[in-house]
Length: 310
Image (cartoon, rainbow, N blue to C red; front, side):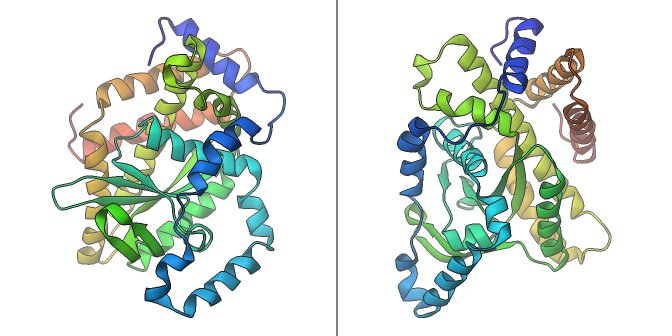
């Protein structure tokens, strides 16, 4: 991260956390330059006519009905959409994670399979895919509910199954089973980032570059810790071993694809520095302090149990 001193890191964190008196909706600039372009790449129902036929009309009706539900209003307000867009754009254009590509799900899989985006990685065996459910919230309660849905699927011997998956480059069209995680973005970070990302990297000032670096690090940590949690969850004795090992292998392939291209030592040092910075703020951030302290302990435990040297 491009911080010359701990004081610079503290200043940037303060600007993000305390700088916004209210959470603004998606800016017109972000909507026109990023949101609209992302939505244009979403797979359409007509792409799957040859596979599902008249079944598509039933699913379209389900989508219309869901849009009238309270759950839709909770998950799809403008701040929530902003967080999703920032994660998609950051991973695709800024390479916050070592992905080959970022794919969007059809709206059916977004609403009913808990998948806001799909990360694509390369491997010797072919492309690997990871589903992400992005929650833009300060309260972790809703996130824990979504995480429990994934765990319930694993207990039934199932990964997340997408119905309307499309990867034209790999020649894939139709259903896809893939590992998935829940990622949390603080609404304050989403607001701080939206008008930075519309600028080319070389046009950003030092403060904007530092904010981008900080949020990139936070999302890398969030993604890895979420993957580690699912991998370790599949260690539990209650799982049917052969089936669990097959699901676990898919999570471990994604973990390997990320950590082989990540400086884990530097990432953990940045996590330690982040904890020190949060602890030094005059205004207390008890939830954030607890979260990142626990994240550090959890990740260190994972490295030890999986014998990963950093």
